[in-house]
Amino acid sequence: MKQTPSIGCLVMAAGNAKRFGDNKLAAVVDGKTLIERALDAVPKKLFARVVVVTQYAEIEALAVERGYTVLWNRHPDWGISHTISLGTNELQKDCDAICYMVSDQPLLKYESIAGAISLYREHPDCIVGLSHNGTRGNPCIFPREFFPELLDLNEDHGGNTVIRRHEDRLLLYEVAPHELTDVDTREALSDLVASQNSVKSKEI
Image 1 (cartoon, rainbow, N blue to C red):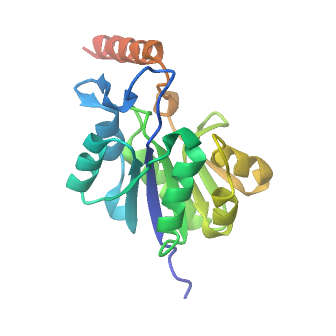
Image 2: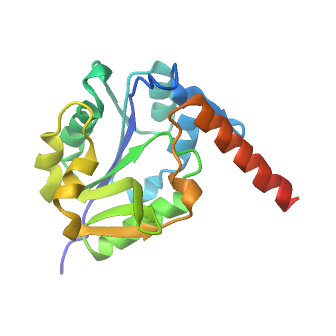
């Protein structure tokens, strides 16, 4: 009988957020910070381990509170590839696949990540990414086969670089478009909050 692959989760929360102006993960959407929303979206029971890579003490405290492993990124200026390297080196010790999560998608749902995990378990040789209408977003799940390529990334090159080399191995899990919306600027955050308020007012 084939063994069920062990999946780890890497929450990437170490960026300098230069376009935002300060630690954007402390920004609040509907009463919760972006990092709280990211951590709440993690289906912890479906992962063998969850690792959070950060440069912020307040994020470290939140992650520890939830029982997650924290790795300190002392060189966030080296780009997202360094965060990927730190987390991959740690999780490859005991995981067959890793789900790479960014922390600035405040509307991402727990259920969507769980659905992507289910799809990956059906196709453990594939890369699985969330998408809407064929446009891929985050998070993405990579099997062990691709760890060396992920570890070989440099500067601000992320998983997209690896996926572009292996489009034939990519499976997409469909979600609502707003779940894939990330927040890179204060304007983007304001637009997102306004959009959410508009939806809520229509529901009332």
